[in-house]
Amino acid sequence: AAKRAGRNTSQCYGPELVQRLNERIDMRQRLQEAIRGAEFELHYQPQIDLTSGRVRAIEALVRWQHPRLGQIGPMRFVRVAEETGQIDAIGAWVLARACAQHQQWLSQGLVDAVVAVNVSALQFQRPDFVALVEGVLAASGLPAHRLELELTESVLMDTVGRGTEVLAQLRQRGVRIAIDDFGTGFSSLGYLKRFPVDKVKIDRSFVADLGQEGEGAAIARSVIAIARHLDVRVVAEGVETEAQLDWLRRHGCDEAQGYLLAKPMSAAELTEHLRDTLARPDALRTRPT
Ligand code: C2E
Ligand code: MG
Ligand code: MG
Ligand code: MG
Image 1 (tube, rainbow, N blue to C red):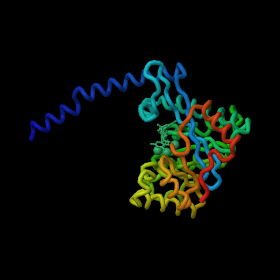
Image 2: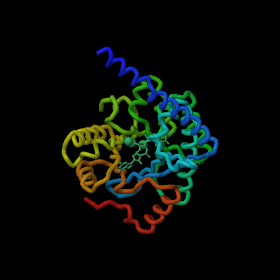
Image 3: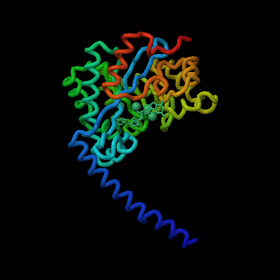
Image 4: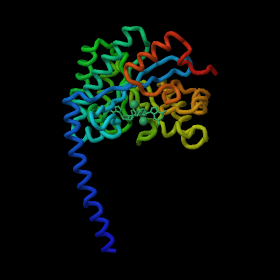
């Protein structure tokens, strides 16, 4: 048994860990170069109103365009950037870029929607976060009510006391708050009562098994019921099939986002997409019930 434990220990602290640490250090340096060299880019994915078929929100999703490695998704670098604190610089850039781009779409009359920006826990906990948001809104000219911040439940859990206050300050200024990946964290539905939010996004893991009438469907049903009761909008993320969309529409979900409706697109692609939609008002419309 001792021998086995020893082997396990050496497995834990052996070459694998060293390699992982080295990768991490590499990643930190590469991220530093990426920040300096402006290698980040935003893609945008619409959230569609299930009643009107209109675009209600456009979510900004960061990508890292590495000169040699190609496109790297946020799942591969956001965690590290949080650990190193580099998320501050990246997050500030994302917020500024998303607001500036959205203000342009609004002024071109291409859309009547909010821009949704993902905010990491670390960013949200900064004492100057509200000031950052105010500065970005002022610089871009975007009205506060056109900005929606997507926070995960864990962000809210981590910051119980002050977090509520920051949320209140943001909402007082007109900024909208959405809870992302809802149902995956530790919070209960009762949480929605304590935190003033405008929207909840049902996590895509629940949306994935809506057809089977299993756990996902049960959770989605409760979220929709409570949200309606509290006058909070509900969005289902990761909608990939007609069956899922039908289910959501039948059960009164307000909005949907997913590959079935529109994939994340570059700013240029989404501009084209929005133009097409304006030219053909039914293009994005989902089938009426
Ligand atoms: P999220 O905010 O929950 O974003 C949804 C993710 O699901 C995106 O992945 C999106 O591309 C993907 N997705 C959308 N529709 C579908 C679908 O129908 N099927 C499937 N399988 N996936 C779909 P992405 O862009 O890789 O982003 C992953 C996560 O990284 C995001 O999850 C968010 O938590 C984080 N993230 C993205 N951009 C930012 C950012 O600017 N700042 C921070 N802090 N985090 C970000
Ligand atoms: Mg999100
Ligand atoms: Mg999400
Ligand atoms: Mg998610």
